[in-house]
Length: 274
Image 1: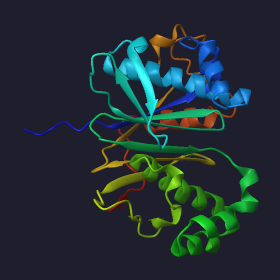
Image 2: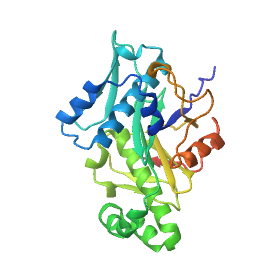
Image 3: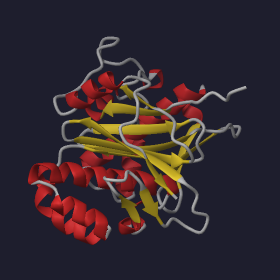
Image 4: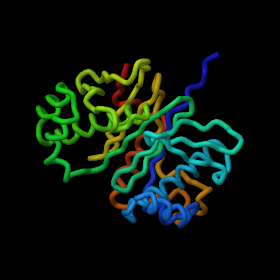
């Protein structure tokens, strides 16, 4: 009997809309972040509402009451969740950029990683310096040889794949980025990620014009499903009409891309890290 293949889910949210919904958020959480050293009010708001959405989404996926879920981070910052009674939680990972929150959930994976990057016109002058310091020689040559109009797109493809892989391992940016090599021509990842060298598969998605998304997990990567503004009952009623799928102007390209992608869209690119 064939084992069913569960897609890797990527749920995309507009943080502005989550803030408007506001359920499940307490001032105490924001105050704790301030005490912990997160001085930027906008960053605190982003973290608090992102965590509320994550808790509500995990509640929806697992059936566990949201108030029984506890979010934790290990010493390297990789998040995990536990629930009263010790029920297993699916692997997940979180990323955010330009007002968009991405939460990847891998029902059958021991660990997953996700990275989303939005338009970054201010980054253009620094692309060459970042490529020289953080990319492998082959990647650096590929990025710098690209036509000026294509250079940022190629740079962000490489960057998001690297981040997704390293977030899967839990190493994050503490691990030397140049040791995770992505070749656009071959579509493969070559990385040195510990003695066990467990294969990691990753996929890059051109999410929308100037928007990039990458997901990764240990073992084979199943189809990826994209979901925009998943309803989260644990956060209370949404201020938007059912099915409206709010998107502020900066998020609207992502909303359109998620709708066009569909639940079982084929991969555009796949890479293996071994």
